[in-house]
Image (tube, rainbow, N blue to C red):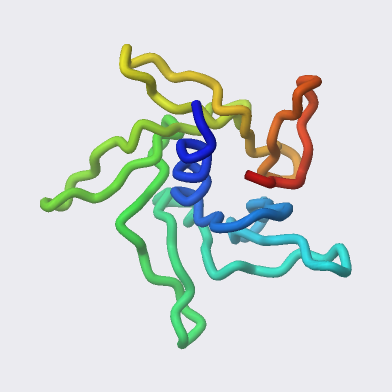
Length: 135
């Protein structure tokens, strides 16, 4: 898996640049760590009931995007009709983010959503996970 594949997977979750991110366990909001070591909302959240990925509007409400995370962790895009199609990416119950390969098998991407904190982490060359994403 090359760098472009990893960037595409992160964009599916609303991550556009380098930094430390988490999904707030209470609100489902995607947050980025600021220079004061505090968490700032990015304007994206995951609705806990429907799994829909939502964006904040200028009225401080959230509108659904065309993407959701279904009950088995698969990231899906809404098609032409109201049904959803798999994107080839899923989040396992342990938080591992996987990408489907050409043999229809899900491979580890080296990213995970840490269960306790909701941090999106990248595995380093030693097999340990780090909070900072720098693709």
